[in-house]
Image 1 (cartoon, rainbow, N blue to C red):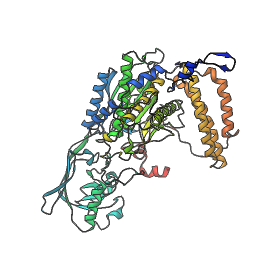
Image 2 (cartoon, rainbow, N blue to C red):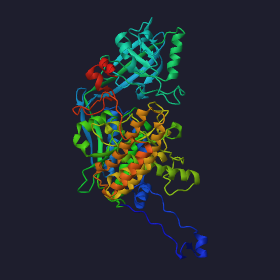
Image 3 (cartoon, rainbow, N blue to C red):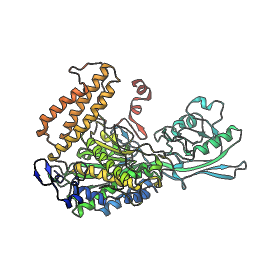
Image 4 (spheres, rainbow, N blue to C red):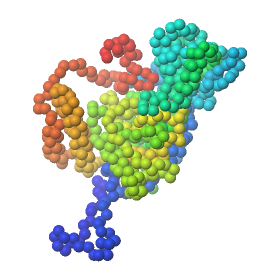
Length: 627
């Protein structure tokens, strides 16, 4: 569909002997090789995207979004959403409006119980001296909203002693300690101790110094204040403040030495019926056959201030994709897409659940999703950028397409870093020059892509993400830690991949087949290596499954109504060879076991942010027994 320029061969006077004029030989001894291009893009499309996409523009958006404390349904989330909507209007997109889905704690969207909107207006935690005078402010909503745990409720403690309960998750942590009427200090997340500390022992509130997720740099920076959580559906409701490990250990040390520590706390916060208000916009497809089909760009707009990489970066990057594509189409540098491109900014996981279950008309139009969550981490974050596949239960060619684009971008960025020259270095003026080193990766969970990929919806979702990130969910997740060059490169990759998907037709099938064959050989090698470590039954099962998955990947072309008719015989020969490579057994062995099937009456995953369907409906004891 988008042929590249053919190679030119010099004139020859005898077969097999090329003779060039001496002057020409001195000036250009060998014809220049063709410029490498991303999969399925023409040279003109590649150049247009590379010239227009701006990591600096994305960084400016990150800075704007990171000023808001973006809890679901909150005034901060709405302010961030308004910033996005105003930008979309100015960029000339269509259907610019929030998709509003009520959320009151009772309404269900598939397996997601909607969570009411949570807002905080004031919160302070003070240390007092023996006379009750204020000594030091330990936490302030106005200064750092992350210091108040999400889903805290209103409360006031004029003066109370602090009691250290350690982890606070077992009764033994409270042995010999008078907790009633006091505040408790814990090293655990507030949600983990609220039932015992407040419900069981009468504590008035919680002070937590919980550390961040375990990774290689865990515990090294004791100044980090982590995002805290409480259960918005729990019977026991309370408030909790978050302090750094350095502060928490200092308080614990003073208490262990026999010192009395007195605190005062006041919180004005709570949840009320609200809505998941999801900014959305489109670039309409023009093909009469497939124009109503949609390729959706996704992120999650919520998270605590500053939340720069998680996930102002993903939100800003898909906004930059929207700006870039809309501008290039208006200027005539790109033709309008065949399929519609949609952009959405929901709260993480629960908002996507609500969108797909609450708007099944939209879900049916989505042919593929590109989900961006944490995509701008610079060297300071220690981030590695991944292009992540979907589950084996939903095989799709879209992942080989995205992975090939990432490999192309790696080559361009590495060539520039190594030589100072590349056709498409994609640098930002104030960004770095390091190679991208994107890693095509197998399935990982932890963001909205798992909802799209769930069998309830069956929408193949490509997950662009950073991991690790040593500042995730802390007060140090700042715009200063992001790299505008990386933001621009990821925006290019997302734009190129989505653009290719939006314009797929039958002429692209041979190129897609070449991508799959190449990737399949790599997967065959991995299968052989893994099979060698398994017993005979599991080894044969793996080989059989791998072979079936490759056939299903080829068959996934039909999801886009693409016809591989001219490749049927070639594919059959390739898969026969593939079977031999992975030692696919002729007769499958069988073992008995329980098979669980999806109940179509309850679409969605069983665990989401702030809510789990199984224990709510079956009870915790039965869920434990099932496991």
